[in-house]
View 1: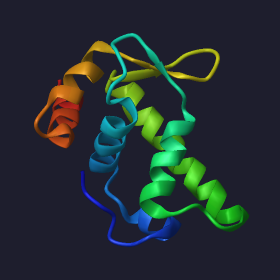
View 2: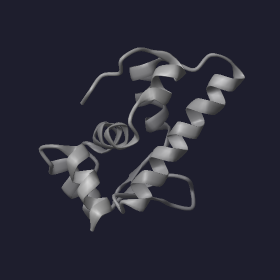
View 3: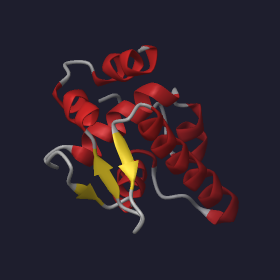
Length: 113
């Protein structure tokens, strides 16, 4: 997993989406079984750990926009899906991504097929 080149929402917004989505996915879903659910707030906690908690309303909204973008990337790649109660479900391609030696390359490959 790559560490950010700084902290705060500005650093989060500078991150490349695919590597960020891949590394966050691995952290959030490691240890979760196929077809099992994971709370969406794990994404918030992981990003806050890496970039710091957002300060102020504008930063909070920007932070949440990135969280939503990551979930959309995961859904487009068919590695995770949102379920009606708002939790995330690990899908078969997501289990394969977790086992990949380079999760960002595996995520790019999923988009290419």
